[in-house]
Length: 167
Length: 295
Image 1 (cartoon, rainbow over the protein chains, first blue to last red):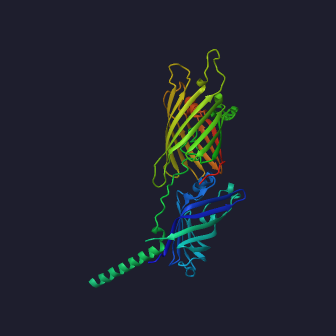
Image 2: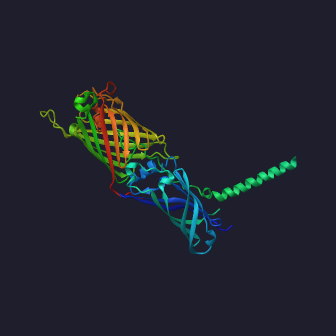
Image 3: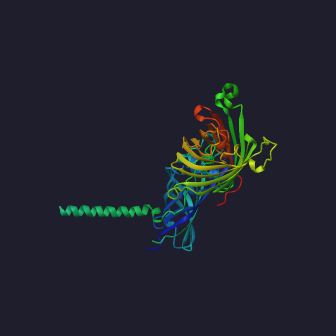
């Protein structure tokens, strides 16, 4: 069996939300991602407590008050590359892909669609994508006192380097 | 009969096999083990103090916590003294997180014009999903009272103004809502009133939190004195509410003590909580990230 499956445990996901007063930003450096080149299935798993913020207080509030990491420790995306046949995993090159799937965050599962890019290089894959979600869709409540300073829109940037998965 | 069994078994096998293949296709994530990243329990208490005593909570690295504490007069003084609010005693303090596991702090109280300073070190941190079941914290500090000497005729030493305290806290966040900690505290005063008096006071600390909502909690802080009690003093006991609003934590409480450092509340609490000698007080904490958090 050839190398159908690719994975990483140290993928990168960043999110940011631009509010009136401050921009909230965080980075995750140990995202798990597995891609099946045969079917185009792609899945991500993120431990919420792994998001690092510039301000310790923001990180605490993120975990305690917003995403409730003790209750919902993990976020997952399970989806598929809809134009998988256009990607030649055996040849170096860059391919624009479209991904459709379900994102589970804060106990809520919602359909998500995004455009991304898969770069094949030296037998490795670089998967990159940018998309937006709305906090309100995932039942994350923002208290009235800070609602004006915060944006409901979260910009998510994904950047993972996948290696062949040996079975 | 045996033919039917055979068909059924075959069918079962085919369905099971098909399911397995499908499951494999669907759950790619199970093919790689989760990276065993160590996780810790966070947010056992809203603040670095339960009420009077230190909590098992630490400041993050590079965080400055400006703390303004007030203790008022007795509620029983009634409307004439505005239920004690006419008399305020305060402590202004600054705590700073050098690392996630080491903090230092200084403060000054109006009571006895006292300066105090401490360091707080977390030796063991409670894990989430495995790891240590508890956090263990060591706090040591000193307090210096700067009031004029009462007896100027005798030789007075600076060391007589100084008291030290040492504390070990063992705490656990049992659930999202409930945290409990027990501590052992020793206060050493270089000078005590009478020659036959013990310079060391030993106390137990019991602190608990019950979360009422995401941003409010009920807290209790109790310090029974075990040995070396200053004559005439009572066990400090306090109960109140933590209210968090963004970068602020308000701790509103009722207590029998006025002291706002370990030496002051463990050796200077003269009111009896159970006889209704209760005061209102608050701690206001405002945190600032003054140093970028390093990855």
